[in-house]
Image 1 (cartoon, rainbow, N blue to C red):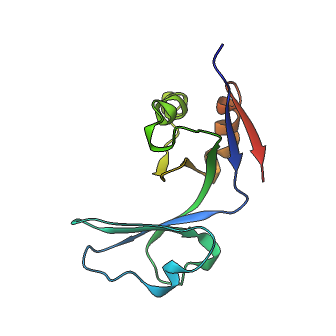
Image 2: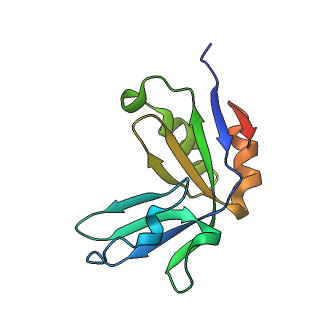
Length: 129
């Protein structure tokens, strides 16, 4: 029997911000307990607590995050995102994923949160923080 994946639902809402590729990283984006900044040759994306995003910043609001807990393989873990994404995709629930060295954060829109919890709880233990 496979070990159940444990997810922790973070209690805050996040916005996914979009900037042009040449935009410098704003100072506000470097402050706080949780933020993710990705800069490529095509864009700058910042995931940040929604209530702290300055007015006028283009963002997709109302995303909630599940943190994958206890995966000891870190960057070498295989199949975790696929296992979480598949049932959500099959039910037309979009996701946004952030991977770090030690774990993954799976974001779903607030409007899909209850359905996502119901689907994921069939094979995951979900902690609400």
